[in-house]
Image (tube, rainbow, N blue to C red; front, side, top):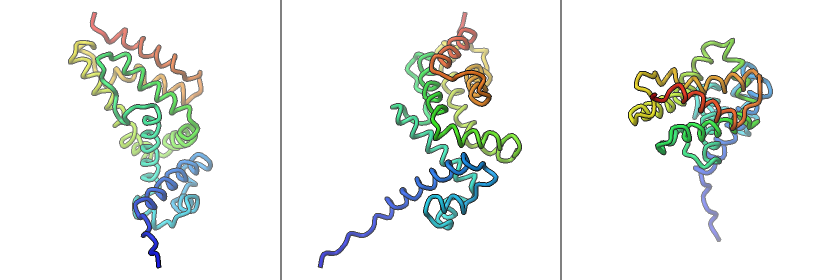
Length: 204
């Protein structure tokens, strides 16, 4: 009698995890954050809610991890390391590369729809807004701070520039245009933002 191979628990867990990510992002985009529940995510993903609670303590934690995973996938699809801003020695080129990836991600319905739902909820649900800023947005902004500081050390950015304020010259206009639909977001747009910002940041 041929013995059947034992089920691959790791593969099964990864399949379930990805189904949960997809379900959470889909639901928050379709019905909004308040109506999204752990039970609903579990039903959509085809798992028991105990499976979700084994890995996460709340729906907010599920969504946070789902967004981090989505960002990782977007970077990998673009051939970049996730959560890294390259340092080729050319600050303008490095920033343009990362912002182009960001544009592609913002235009991807997989990201755009749930992101808008959470952005809207974060305005009226202050604790949720703070949690996502602290856990998701700030670590990404810190990457820009680190890259700008490296450019300062290399003499490519003025020493008196505050990197945390400087990054807002290209990140904030992109976020506003995306959130408010004031105009299209494109690679050409973010390239221009970088050019304009660096004009004021470089030593003279």
